[in-house]
Every structure is written in C-alpha cells, then in structure tokens.
Amino acid sequence: AQSVTQLDSQVPVFEEAPVELRCNYSSSVSVYLFWYVQYPNQGLQLLLKYLSGSTLVKSINGFEAEFNKSQTSFHLRKPSVHISDTAEYFCAVRYSMIYNQGGKLIFGQGTELSVKP
Amino acid sequence: NAGVMQNPRHLVRRRGQEARLRCSPMKGHSHVYWYRQLPEEGLKFMVYLQKENIIDESGMPKERFSAEFPKEGPSILRIQQVVRGDSAAYFCASSPPWTLENYGYTFGSGTRLTVV
Image (cartoon, rainbow over all chains, first blue to last red):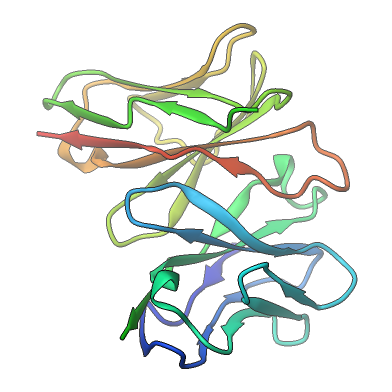
C-alpha cells in the first residue's frame, strides 16, 4: 500500500537554529509531493510543492524541500527558524492519476515543530 | 473569492445522535475531498466527490458514514449514531477539475466533532 512516513513526531529546536523535517514515501512511480503546515486549531495551508522540474523547491518564508527520487524522500529544511514557525507540518504525496483515481493525497503522521527562544 | 467554508467549526453531539458537517468549496471548484484527523494522527482520506457523484469512497467506514455533493448547495458528510471514536477534526478540501497543473487542494478550517 502507498504510504508516507514522517520519521520524527516532534522536533524541538532553538530559535535561529537550522531544522530538517524528514519525509519518505513508499513508491517510486510518478509522484507529486507537498508539505502542508497546520497552526493550532486551524486548517492546512500549502507550504510548498514539487510537481516536476527542479528537484529543489522553496517557499516564500524560507523553507525548502528537495525531491530525491532514488531515496524516495522529500525532506523539509530551513536554515534559521523563528518562533512563528512553531506548528505541525505534514508531508503528503499524490500519485499519478494512472495509479490513483481522483488524485487523493496521502498524508504522513505529521511532525510537530516547536521553536524555543 | 472566499476559501473553502466549513461549518460548524465546532460540533458537540451525544452518543447515538447524528452529526452533519457541511463544506462549501471554493468558487469554480467542482471536486471535494473529505479527510479525518484523529488526535495525534495525520489526515486520513475518507471520500472524493464531484457534483452528484461519489468518485472514491475507499476511506469511508462501511457503516454510519455517508457523503453527498448535490448539484446545488454544499457537500455534506453525515455520521449517524455517533460514538466516542468519531471525535476528530474533519477537513474538507476542494480543487478545480483535474488538469496537469492542478495538483494541490485548498483546505477548509475544519469541523471539530466532539462526542460526549
């Protein structure tokens, strides 16, 4: 079965430190990859996505993620975090329509990023 | 252009009652997806609907749960005879008709169902 694994359920870091949130998915067929962020008691907001082309994608607030097909990974990184980055981060995969009727997203379990002063 | 609207934001039901969760997709979006987020877990796909059609309900529990997306009006997720285990956040997402460019959804803020 297709699955997404986020290896860390909680990541505590100090402000201005670098952070990496790890994400691996189960299949190497055509995939589209996403990171969503969820602030407390809110819905999910799209942070960044990989559809095709350059394997390094960036968000407007300093996050970046790199698609690594051979390792089936899409890790999220930020060189210097802020208190305001404290939230839950979800990695998600959408498989090609050939394999996935309707293109539903499959989510990882989430990583809670806690940035401390 | 309003985003995906879900209501109510919070819903409390006693065991055995019915819960109705509503989702109005973004303007121009004809595809609706429902996801459930249990405490300490990620989002689990439940059902994918287009207007008047259920396309994929592989994530729906076999009993008590149903969904619809009528020609007019919002999409409705209905849970009959709720039990404590149904307590969760239910998120709706919408997207335009699928094209090569449209690989992301827009999520609503969710309905948090508490069964007491």
